[in-house]
Length: 205
Image 1: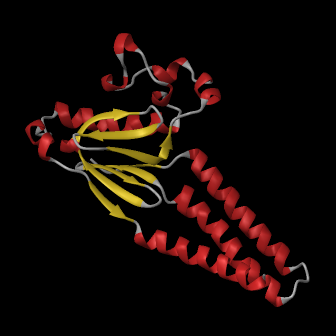
Image 2: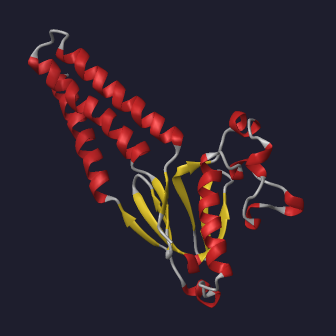
Image 3: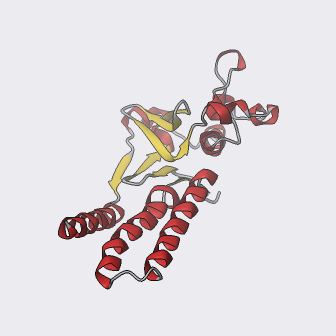
């Protein structure tokens, strides 16, 4: 099976909004007749706004493949092997539960009250069996059209297929661990931009 990727529609929209704001701000600054010194003062801030569009909303994703689930969050990337996974939750966001810890996906938040109330009957149908609670109950975060629900559907569907095919050794679950890697590059760029903004503001005072 090929890998599957999930990025939220809302995240894409927010990323575009920040890109547009940064681009529009740059145009305003360049054609406003400001002094070069004043223009240079605004560039790091505009760059940071545009970068946040990528870092907070364009970069995060959920990746599912034959070996496990990868949660790409702004500050860390978490890799959860299938054998380490014991449950999938969607109370606040897509959350992968292992024996030792829980790992939450930035890219798959649960819906708010208004969005949950807009759920349709088809959003509750045909979900993997592990999506349903007692007496067939379903959390708002499991609705197919929500970000958390769409990601959870992707994870649970692949997980169920692997379990049915006997490809997961449950005897190893207690000893298996997720791996967490800090996104040093993304963090470093953010810190450099923040430091540049602070330094220029301090120099202007």
